[in-house]
Image (cartoon, rainbow, N blue to C red; front, side):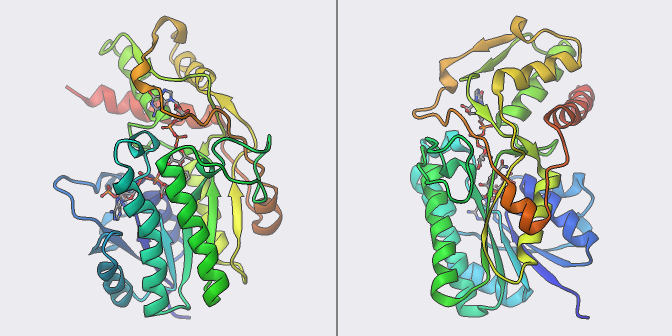
Length: 325
Ligand code: NAP
Ligand code: F7E
C-alpha cells in the first residue's frame, strides 16, 4: 500500500507537534505549512523529536495561492487545518487579523482543496469557544452556538464553511469541536501554562506572585496528546461529520491553580493576585462538553485526568525554569 500523506497547517503549534508525532508513528509522510516569522517557531517540533522527519513548505493561511502550491507539492490524502490566531484574549485587539487567518484562512484552504483535489480529507479545528454563552449545561454537537469573542465568531464561520463544503461539494470535511486541551507545549499566554510556569518560578524563588484575571470561570480541560488522536480518527471514518471532543468534567481556574500549587507544597491563596488587566470584554463563564458521540462513533475517550495533566506540566516547567540562568 502507498504511504499515506498528510499536510498540517499550524504544525508549529501545540497540537501540530503532537499530531505530527502521532502521524509519523502511524507511518505517514508529514508535510507542514510554515508561516514566515522573524524568530524561531520550531522549538515544539524539536522538543517532541520530529523536526528532521518532516517536510516544511512556506505558506500562510491568508494567501490562498500558497495553500494551492502546498497542496500541489505535498499531494496529501489528509489535511489538518490547525493554523489560527488562537489566543482569545488577543482577538479583541486584532479582530481583523483573527478573522483573516482563523475564519477566511479556513475558507481559503477549503477552496484550495476544492480546486486542486476535492478527494482530500480535511480536518477543521473547531472549538468549544463557539458555544460561548452556553445554551445547554453540557454542550454537544446539537447545542446552539453563541460565540463571545472575535476568535469564537471567526471559528464559527470556519465551522459552517466546513459543513457547507461537505454539503455543497460532497467533500470529506470534518470538524472537531475540541474543548480546551493543554500540555507542556501549551503557549505561555494560556492560563494553564501561565500558572504552571508561574508556580515553578515562585517555588524556585524567581517570583513571589502570580497575576491572573477571572479565576471563577470553568473549563473542561484535557491533554493535547489524547485529543490529536480524535482528530485522526475523524478522518478515518467513511463519512465526514462533526464531533465534540472533551473530558466531561469542568473545573474553575481557581481549583486548577490549587492543583499546581499543592503539587509543589505551596498555598495558592498566598500568591495569586487578581489583576483586572486580564479580564476580558466578554467572558465564557462555563464550558462542559458531552463527548458521547466521539465515544460511540470514534471509540475515543480522554485518558488523562486534570491532576495528571497539571502535574505533567509542572514537572516540565520546574525543569525549564530550573535551567534558566
Ligand atoms: P497554537 O499553539 O496557538 O498554534 C497555532 C498555529 O497556527 C501555529 O503553528 C501558528 O504558527 C499557526 N498560524 C498562525 N497564523 C498563521 C497563518 N497566518 N498562517 C498559517 N499558520 C498560522 O494552537 P493549538 O493550541 O495548537 O491549537 C490548534 C488549533 O486548534 C487552532 O486552530 C486552535 O484555534 C484550535 N483549538 C485549540 C484548542 C486548545 O485548547 N488548544 C481547542 C479548540 C480548538 P506560528 O507558530 O508561526 O505562529
Ligand atoms: O483562558 C481565564 C480566562 O486563555 C481560560 C484556546 O486554546 O481554549 C483556549 O481558549 C480561562 C478564561 O483559554 C487568566 O478569562 C484568568 O476564562 O487559557 P485561556 P480559552 O480562552 O478558554 C479554547 C477551547 C480555544 O479554542 C482557544 O484557542 O482562564 N483567565 N486569568 C486567564 N486566561 C489567561 N489566558 N490569562 C490569565 O491571566
